[in-house]
Image (cartoon, rainbow over all chains, first blue to last red; front, top):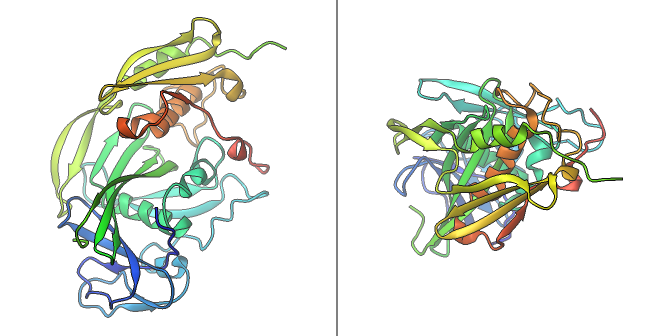
Length: 205
Length: 141
């Protein structure tokens, strides 16, 4: 798996990013042609990035993911801050989440939590994904906002999933499946993780 | 000191969760709802056996899952869940179900550690279901 230093992204119909020697990550609802949101992961230097809709000029990004997240996902903290001394109910981030079989969105919350739920529960999975916390949180946000599937489960949780495209300027991409598991009744996020899928030897769709 | 033991309710509760199905909603590229269908909790896996270990009794729970010709044995030791092993507690901050905490947590962990993996990608035939020590106990509550 490539070791990438993440900064940020573009949007669905935003103009093509300048040719930066980078790795890009795309989050899609489903299918190669269904790119909803994309995230650029630059190895170094400045990238052009935006969460704005088509036609809006991309915003240059030179700093960490948190700043970029602010406009679309206001409550994502720059760093989780769930070290020793942090309360279990400290809010790490809130996410806009599509409602199950209904229009509109709910708000899901990631708390520091403990071994059973929240950031402290999912923390080991961050290293299994790529790009660190910023990329992980972005994938959570995209999965909740535009899931490919929402399955309510008997254990009181939703299982929400979406494909995430990790794109390489070398001309191939890897399709991950990202899962987020929020509690149905409260929107408290129990856990989240990504699964690396197949590599496609074509340019990112 | 002897081994810790699970309470008796964990097996039927966990079995009920694992064998449940629910109505999943699937969305297309444009975000529109494309399909609603029954989705088993186990996904592409099947439950071959769930019960206490024949030798260790209620100190170890064994969950045997098969998928795509692969068999994975998930072992769960009561020692790894000292606070929840009785399966009598309910923590509304993370458990919104009618089941007790241990059954819910185990179902989530089995999903994390087995069910959401492609059977071909699971390298070991045996998976120990547990919470890593480094995240077991936040110091502040």
